[in-house]
Image (cartoon, rainbow, N blue to C red):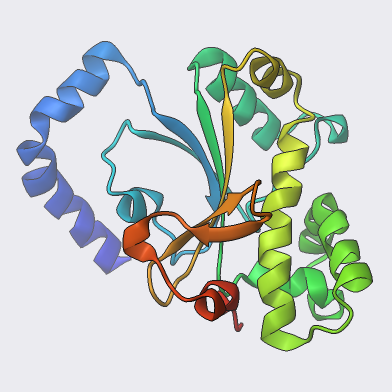
Amino acid sequence: MLKLITGLHHFQSKTFLSHKELFDRLVNHGQNPDALFITCSDSRINPNLITHTDPGDLFILRNAGNIVPAYAAGTGGETATIEFAVEGLGIKDIIVCGHSRCGAMHGLLHPEQLERMPQMRAWLAHTEVTRRSILENYKDLQGIEQLNVAIQENVLAQLENLRTHPCVADRLAKGQLNLHGWVYKLRTGQVFSYDPEEGQFLPLSPAQAVTEDESQELETTI
């Protein structure tokens, strides 16, 4: 806690004052974020840091496994946040960003390790389609390779779940909303984006280009 409190004092006495104009603008004119960024609660992920954005640029939704429950699953914090972002803020881009070394996806593949976490097991039921896809379509994969694929498949599953939300479906039909699937690699800082035409995750920019073998690696050990 000492580290956190010390950080707060530094923010108030240094950072806040040096960005006073920005914070005044956010107070006086409200927020107008560029995107809804849905990602994992993992403490190693900092959306503003990896996207080099400021306060007010991203509307952020975080939970274990960057999961978006399907709309039929009922009312909840995720559903309300998505609705507010789309209807209330007029968000035009939604990003679902998974990451390497994801503990939630490891738990999805190894539910026997969640015996003492019944709520976590229940939460992961929202992405049961990912687990079934791995078991049925990637039977030959084990360990890290299996986890790599699960992380990517989970991002795609959450994009599909997003489409079940009425506000999202409506804006997509009108061409007023774009969905993006990303995977962030902890070891290198690279971000891979799903390319529907290629049917795979590719480096988000030429500057992040890697070999085909490296792009498939997405190292993810727990």
